[in-house]
Length: 76
Image (cartoon, rainbow, N blue to C red; front, side):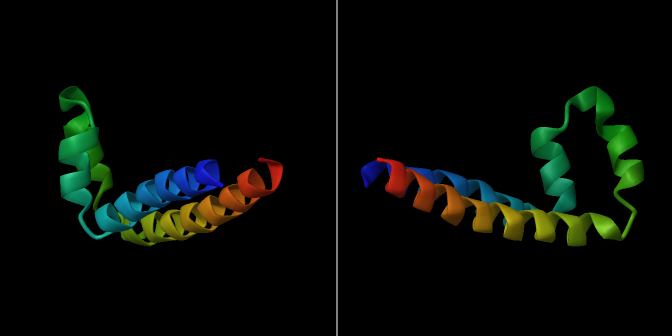
C-alpha cells in the first residue's frame, strides 16, 4: 500500500507542475529549455494551443497517476 501512495504522490506532483506551468509558459521555458534553444522556443510560444495542450496533459497525467496507483495497490 505504501508503494501505491508513493506512486500516486509522484505522478500527481508531475501533473501538478504541468498544470502550474500551463498558465506560465515563459517561466516553463526559463526553467526547462536549454539556453541555446530559448529563442526558437519563444517564437513558437505565440501559438495559442500551448496552454490548452499543457492543461490537457496535466489532466491526463492526473488520471494516469490514479490508475497506476490502483494497479500498484492491487499488485502489491
